[in-house]
Image (cartoon, rainbow over all chains, first blue to last red; front, side, top):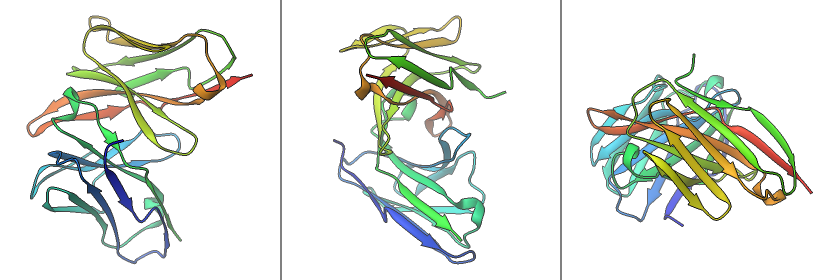
Length: 114
Length: 111
């Protein structure tokens, strides 16, 4: 299995609080992605990174920010969490642009905003 | 209309049956991916293909680029095949490429 660790695995917090999710990889892959998964929707891309300090927005980036200060870590931050951000969040990695190489997924983080 | 459409949304089969899940897309792609998500939530990549057919064990994936359509077949289905199967297309961007996902097909195989 690809070495991807998401933390925390579960989190419950209140509206308005900041939340940071961490994705850590040991594969030295260039590309890292954050997705959210909600009923009635496929996986949707929040942000992705194509190198250290290089990030770009996905289709549902409002309310989220990311940072990648080193190859192995990709952080997703909700500056002021809202109930609409209750979801399951997945991190993924790939060695090349995802269209041409499979992505490997972390186990997910279940986030509940009350 | 979603850029990636899967059918059916839900599928129930008896053990041993031949299963087909379909995926249609409406955009230019660099590759098409099939993934599996087990009840515990983990997501695993099954296939990546840009033409023709690939086979792995009892799973077969095909793609028709002209028709913008792919199928995932499972032969001799087994209860352990019960999972959500997800189709995704790789689309080029200025900073590499990224995936757009279908909503998934929930497969239940009964013994």
